[in-house]
Image 1 (cartoon, one colour):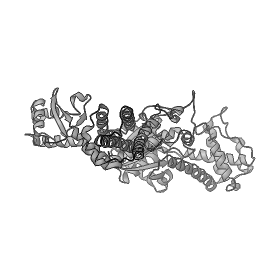
Image 2 (cartoon, helix red, strand yellow):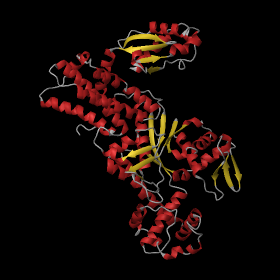
Image 3 (cartoon, one colour):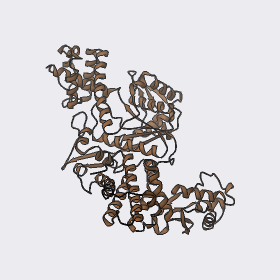
Image 4 (cartoon, one colour):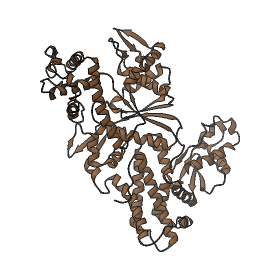
Length: 585
């Protein structure tokens, strides 16, 4: 309905005297907003005030001209000019009735449209280092990213979902060393486990599986020289020790065997991550590997572009990017003195690669601790000749999972983390997907396990699903009474829906497309969550206050049409969030 009013106002504006000389048509497009108080109507428009200067007329006079030029429409019951020149629109009952019919006619596609930019968007999210299973923090990224992707598609954008696999660099070396040490331990070879290695049980499990395959890499002889390593923590520097131990392992095993152990660990962990996400209903279109950027020459291609822009220099044997030219706090190394490129070099190469694949917007979902990384990557993008604003980053704050009063730690090195799979097993996918998007991604989330598991009105996902199931229970009761719902008859008697509860539902239902547009535009699924909670509340209130299966066939069919429209909207909204809509509970 908002779009229809925009079209009516646009038609009126196009006929205003002097409008052709007033300026850019896009800048003069009407903005239709919901009124804060329905006493002032359903929608308001401020276009008359925006046109006052170019048309050199008083806003209220322009508002009256627009009202006079608006084509006749059964959608609008009345218009009025308010304040300095707002145009308020009050919708007719017929408009709400028509929208009700449209909901049931369009079914699962209702609320979808072309309100978005229509651009090709590459949405990258989760992208957790493949050094361990996904934990509950990663789950929030997954639920948020998948829901944003659904919302963007629902509003007409072309979305490609991607998971970036950091399968190169120091973290993978640490993972390889951790697995190798566990392989040695499994063979009863005494070896100290590095303080900063990956301690989780999953490493031991992979070692058991890999023992036979890497038998030629497991012997005390491979540890020759370990006594000469610098001290590990707590008496020494854990990172210096770790790097020295990695070099020892690499030299003892040889590059081929070291890489083979790396690939085995990577494949095992990545297989687990893929399965975990798929079971969670999250399926990226592509898994993109960092090593492919190096092997294809994409990293060097990106660095060549940066160098061509004059934004690199050599110092102490390393190549530096002049990030300070773009407002960063310091310049950044892109190639170390040993010739190996940095994570930052791979990251800007990855973003250039995205752009060269034809995507208009690069939408990344990162952890809140990456806040300082945003201007750095934008600087790299700009230095490569692209517009910095093609990169949009949404930061996701941390999740605090509570078991009673105890807040759980989540460290993939220490192994003291709560896996996403464990959370899903405990509360179910529906509750996990829903709870993860109940708050803005910019806010910390306290995940209440007991609430998520409860079957009560206090549990929002249960409350909403129960509203959906309640409508189905009414339809089952109708069949049990040997009655049928005549939808056509219901359409003819929608004028009988005069109760306050019915009017509230009619108005709430009509807002659904606007909520989808808002949630997509702001990358804010919580708007949809709050809407569904309010819609469910109004359905429950209506259910408790009125009977639907009444003797009057016209009223009965009209009420059934209304509640089935509610059922459809709840289903559509939950589907975008990745939550099921059960028919019984």
